[in-house]
Image (cartoon, rainbow, N blue to C red; front, side, top):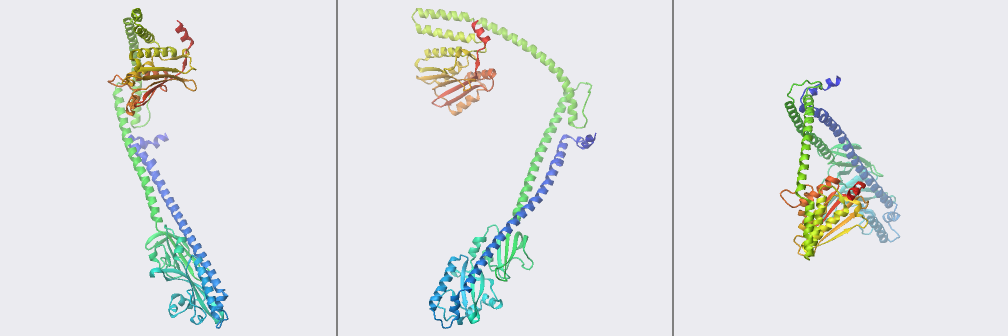
Length: 607
């Protein structure tokens, strides 16, 4: 009762509305709810994935810059501890060869520059009053008025210690590049002063280590301009983030008015008070995520639309079938017969069931009457066929034919025409086999092959050298022990002569091979002729009509009849297969199960 009231809403509508309502409640609403939840989780998971990738890229840059700063600091310490350099700059009247010492120091600087791929600039700037011992070279240079106007020199006056700045370097073809410089104070205690060691890191070196086409990368020191960026034109510009507001963070940022996913990191450079700012931004992450969600939503929407169309078409089709069935059944059940039982509900299926009960009772009575009438009709047809067969048998008296042919044969033999006598003998033997097997469904393989040999001998007499034949039988087969359908091989051979060898003037050849399968359960007969063969299209047509007779044609009926007889007697898995090649020949294979001669059959044969 509860179920009745629970589905009462559905049963009060027709089937079309029921199906559409059920589709909305059971499919559309749950799928849309589930897709919304999945959209949310996909968005969260994808954003988290992009954040992790940006953070990993940030850490890669962090480790690269830190290791670079450590290596540059080791060069600074080596230069600071160079005693030859201290003597060269501090001693007023040296007792050593200054040119040699200058050359050795220059060579060491040159060696460091060549072996350190990250360096593009390595210079030691010395006060002019300490340059009197230094010979002309490209690494140890005086602090001139021009150098005193540079950014690094002014900052060295403000900071006691080493520091990092970004500055312009003029490269080949007078091109300017922004690079990161490490400025180190080299104390000269004996003169109570210092020299400045300037080292710049190659942007190409850094790019090779940290570049990634999927990210926008920006690096600067303190409040300095950006010295390296994925966009080369942005080098020398202000850092894209407000450094006062940003701390260590991985998440969503505003970059040039566009929302991006990125990672920001502040690194304290080795042995200095300077901070390196690293910002890695994935500008494609959010658009890719939104596109993914849009594609997913479109797929879900498309699936719902396709499903809705299918359900709608099916509902129309189903409703139309029910109405048609109801009208048809109502017409059949117009008589007033009392209905005993029915089903609950108020829809088309209830009415259909009501009409069906009426129709079934009437059909049972009608079918019983029709079945009895069919039996009576079939009995009458069988009787008529038997009478017609007897009349036909009486018209063709086999003994009359045999006796007549034998008389003709003896007359030809007496007159010395042995060929005619032999031909009549073969024809008589052939007709005797055909007529004696008209009423039988099986014969021995030995008799069937004897009939084939007789037929081939007749064809040899008829066509002479145009036709030759061979019959090859597996030695393990005892022909008299196996039963086959009568007259299934001769029509195939006749077909080979009529069609395969029709255009051959001589040397036509037909080969019949009898073989057993490996498990000795099946018998295969191969009929091969070396005639004209068939094209692929002709072979396709012949195979297509093995199970369907050719209309309005005298060709192909024999193969169809044999194949059909085999299917009816042995089953659909047995029958005829054909292979043919144009201008080479045709091979027809007959496959049937191997049945042994039963005791009853042997007794009938003896009788």
